[in-house]
Length: 221
Image 1 (cartoon, one colour):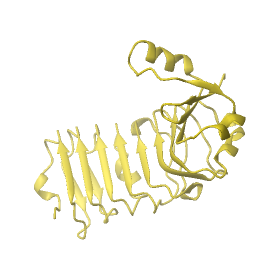
Image 2: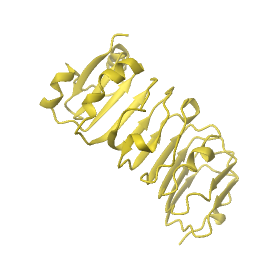
Image 3: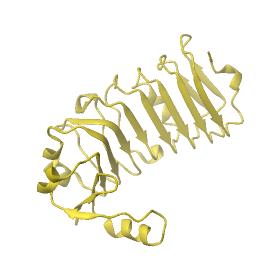
């Protein structure tokens, strides 16, 4: 696996990938905007301002060999795509965790410091487990979920904002998420019912293309 490290000046981001040929192809055909990718080494990290790191098509052996890049750094985001990763001996100081398609990674709160937000870009292909409750996480975004949402949401009791798009759940059970304030739902064609804790008050709601859902049942201020 030929894995290389690139710095993206426009985004102040790092891309660690074995799939750069595909990244370049997508830019060349205009699917993604063209930005500069500057190849660097791990020893060059101290030379650049870095907001976040993206891992794509990276195996766990390589990941374990670069975990020292997390020491003493706070990142705005870390994202993982098409990768198998073991976080068990790593502490990640990050605000926003992004789990992309076809990722196998188990998530435990002990491996994260001050994590505030998680995005699952393709929940139906997520192969990992949520091993513990995440009390620090206030926002979750779920894309392309496949009847996994209810099991996952019980692990986030302090959630204040929930966004779900393109799912197949018929019922959402949000009784564990009693602090929820903001709800955004889109293209949930099968969703018929949402269960809320009696103390929950939704102050912001945006519901689109959820034709079977009774909007009057949402507890609004």
